[in-house]
Image: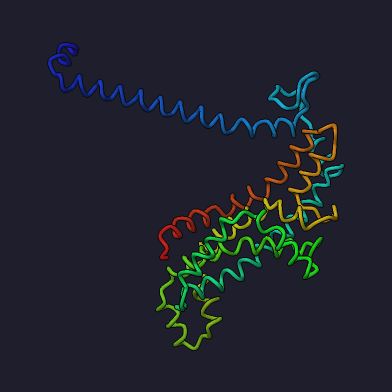
Amino acid sequence: MADSLLASHPARRHAGDDALQRRLTLVLIYLVLILFSLFILIPFLWPFLSAFTTKPENVSSLYLYWPKSFTLEHFNEAVNGRGQALTLLRNSLLSTVSAVLLALLFASLGGYALSRSDFPLKRLLMFSLLLIQIIPATATVLPLYLIMRQFHMTDSMAGVSVGVAVGQLPFMLWVMKGFVDTVPLELEEAAWLDGATSLETITQVVMPLALPGIGAASILAFNSAWSAFFLPLILLSDSEKFTMPLGLFRSLVAYTNMDYGMLNAMALLYMLPSFLIFLFARQYLIRGTMAGAMAGQ
C-alpha cells in the first residue's frame, strides 16, 4: 500500500532521492574532514608518544610506535639534565613579556595619535608601517646588529627585548589604531568637559573601551615574540642567556646521539605557555579579531 502510494507520487519519490543524496554528500564531507584532521594531528601525536613513553627495542624514534611503558624521565632530563629547560623558559618569558609590554605601551599611544590626529602624509606613514612587515628579517640583520653594538646591547636580554618589541610595533600600531577608531570622540569630549586631562582620557576612557583590541594584539604579539629565533641567535653568545628556541636548536646540533624523547619533552614545555595564554584569553582574541575586522581604517 505504501509502495504503491509512493509510486503514485513522483514528487515524493524525487524528494526521497534528494534527501538520500544530501545524506551521502554529508557523509562524504565528514569523511574528508576526519581524514584531513588525522593528517594534521598525527604529527602532534609523535612528540607526545616520544616525550611520555619508552619506545620498544629495535624501533626507530623517528616513527610512530606502540609505546613500551609510560615514563617522565625525558622531562626530568629536559628540566634537570642537559636540556636546562627551566633556565631557557625563564629567559624566554623575561624577554617576551618585556617586549610585549614595551611594544604595547608605544603601540597604544601611537595608535591613539594616528587615530585622532590629522597631519600631512599620514596615509603614507600608515602604509610605510605596513610595508615594514614584508621586509625579511635577514635583510636588516647587519644594521640591527650594528645599532645594538653601538648601544652596548649585544649579548643582553635587554637588547633582545628591545629588538623583538621593535619588530612587533608595526602590526600592533595598525591594530590599536583600528580599535581607537571605534571609540566615539564624543566620549573623550565629555571627559574633557569634566576636567580630565588628555592622559586621563586615554587611560580611563579610550583604553578600557579598546580592551578587546589590546588583548588580541597582546596575544598575537606574544606568540610572535615567543617564537623569535633569528634575533636572539645573532645577539646572544652566552648560553646562560639563551631563549627556548635557541636551546632547542643547541640540543639539535650539539649531540651526535640525538635524544628525541628529551627534545620532544622540551618542545612540549615550549608550547605550554602559548597554549595556556590562548586558553585563558581566547575570548579577547575572538572579540578582538571580530571587532578589528569591522574597525575603521
